[in-house]
Amino acid sequence: MKNRVTGIGGFFFKTKDPNKIKEWYKTHLGLNTDQYGCTFWWKDKQGNDCSTQWGPFKEDTTYFQPSDKQFMMNFRVENLVELLEELKKEGVTVVGDIEEYDYGKFGWIMDPEGNKLELWEPVDKAFL
Image 1 (cartoon, rainbow, N blue to C red):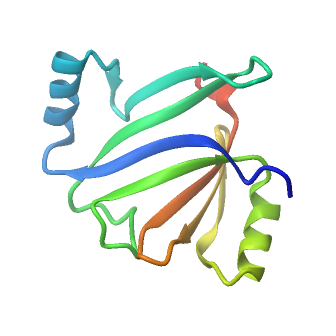
Image 2 (image 1 turned 180 degrees about the vertical axis):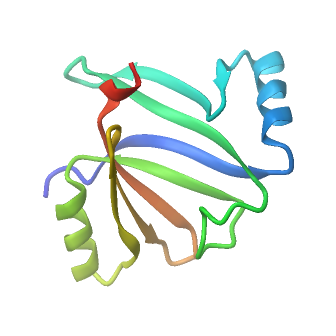
Image 3 (image 1 turned 180 degrees about the horizontal axis):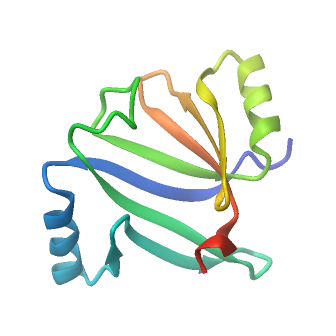
């Protein structure tokens, strides 16, 4: 498999008050926030529209489990199914099952320090 990770898909973190922190980032850093956080748009090498998401989660979220960390990274990948099969063979811990939505497929792994990593095979055009 040539490209495993093609970019950062998102950065997610826990916070006491997601709405308050989104407003702070909007006011002080100019982020164009919505109910999910902020979407950054960019072009890949082929000129395709791509997105990266910044998103605060409520501090009691279970979405980051089994990690007890305060953040979770999302990496953009090209072929999620093939990549997860390769990672399993390499002894990487895969968490849960692949989930598919109109904006892409998602899978999760754990790194050796207990960070849950979200792998996303995106369909960026679903956000346009």
